[in-house]
Amino acid sequence: MRRHLKNPTRKFTADSQNLASLAQSLAQSGSRLERRHWERRLDQSLQKMLGNHQQQAIDSALDHLFHTDLTGYDVLLDGVETASSSCTVEHEGRDYDGLLIAVPVIAWTRFSIPSGSISADQMSTLFAHLHGHVLAKDARAVLAPAMLSIDQLPRSYCDTFLLTRRMVDAALTGKSLQLPAELPETVPFLADTRYLLMAVVAESKRPLLRWEEEEAGMNATAGRRAVLDQWQAQAGPNVQPMLPGCGVELLLPDAYYVACREADKAVRNVSLRAAAHYLTNSLGVEANQLAAIIAAIGDPANGMRVDEYRISFSSGTQTDVYYGVVWPLYDEESADDELSDLPRRPGQSSPLSPLQQIVTALREAGVTRIQNSETVFSPEFCEDCGAPLFCDASDDMVHAEMPEDSGQNSGHLH
Image 1 (cartoon, rainbow, N blue to C red):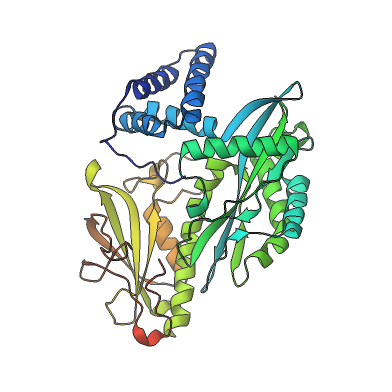
Image 2 (cartoon, rainbow, N blue to C red; image 1 turned 45 degrees about the vertical axis):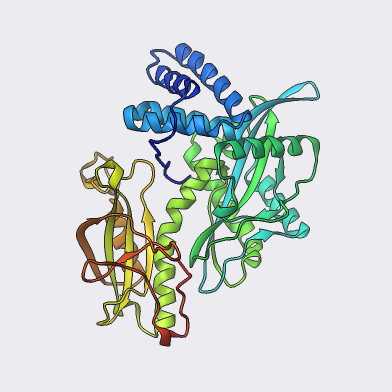
């Protein structure tokens, strides 16, 4: 869900080479029949490696392809995500397809965003709405009994592989799911995503989700939009009490990695709005009295290619950085894109570049004093607490700290 972390020091083993070669063969396929052949072989290899916890070999193959063959990298990444978050299993003499679903909820607050276990009544209500508006009519499902932060989701493809199979088995057999005795601590943010995890199963080749059914028609985009509208309208009032003191936005439940990526993108805008709201209340100023500096952060291992922006906030004539927000770039996003030059259909608005999206979000939050630093900075972090450093008006990277007299010194909010 986050951009894949590259680590060229991983050992490139024979298993890694085999995976990379299969992915490249699939990418170069000249027919659908050939693609199916290589897909089967790649899937078989991935299933075996994921089941044997060979995470390092998989990561090594991804690293290698990222630096040598981006098309092959995309193919292998798609294969790993598919193999770890879906499966076909036999149950009572029939084959069933199972899929791990993430149900993202974006929340923002000046206080604390809850996570952890949810009650049986809350589970029952949410489950009813998911069956009523999201899942295909004949699908079975199981819902994990918790609202999870990203820190509490599976940490590797192998972990996701095991969780998927455990949840698919529970969906087929009616077993209850138990949370680990202790969940990892959640890093506090003003805006963050909470996830419900669900496994959905149906007989092989049968629909799993509502927009796949024949009754939904041929337009999957319209079907997804209709499902989201119903999910937000019907389930929203039930989710809100689970996140007291928070603003809440429900996103579309979807395949695990897809839903998590979409949530990562969506929470960026909300983070800027939440930061502006927090600062205006804490500092006793209007949003148009805040100043924002946008700094591009590059990857030293890849020619300082911009991987994220960091937005610094200050107030009035002060130059101190009071708060900062990180805006990562995902998928094909690039700081170099001139998206206004891309072809588009008549009547279709021009897509915004990442920098334009940031400026638009700041202006919508009421922040009008916006400066874009011309320097591309290295990713610097505080040596004591690990928090990212942010650019001040002098182009120095500094720690964001609220003033002591604000009454809400939040050096530990990130």
